[in-house]
Length: 210
Image (cartoon, rainbow, N blue to C red; front, side, top):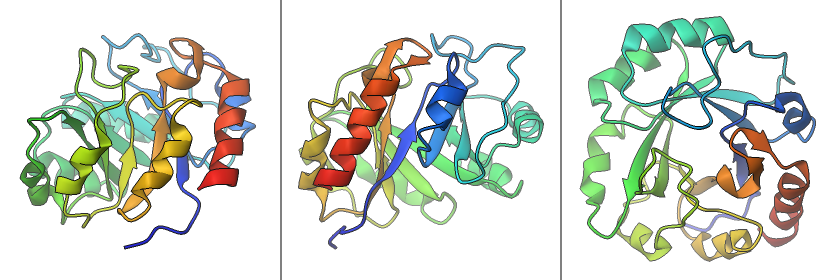
């Protein structure tokens, strides 16, 4: 399995300068609806009008399906990204809303990739992130060699500590079913405030290296 196309770019944890990021036209923009997160968008968040080609992703952690459904409707989300202990049935219920589902798994040396198998017939993508203190945004990459244990059936986003210093190394995963890269803390000046210059640098590496 050889990945010869340009990887999708997802910029997650947007809040303070959403329209500035949107001008760069990443493929996906993530918005965190998890209150304990330092990148939580806030109770009164209003989704600005974004270019149609940018997919809006709502990020949730162990949230009630009814709450997620309302936020999907209110903000016209294209995808939900689930960082908690959401079940296959939870994913199926959300899929029935007519939106995409990204299921996140936090990876360390003890992770059993067989736990992803029950979700294969439901989700659109997996996202493999670093297991750490936070549900994402831990600013540390995991050992990508662990991905050799994944069966590659569902395309996945790679997250966890991606920066302009290490992102070119993602090309080492070209034979895997890698769909896109997910950047967050590595491209921001402060939580929720993205660095436009760092995102542009990522895009430059992305176009020249992948």
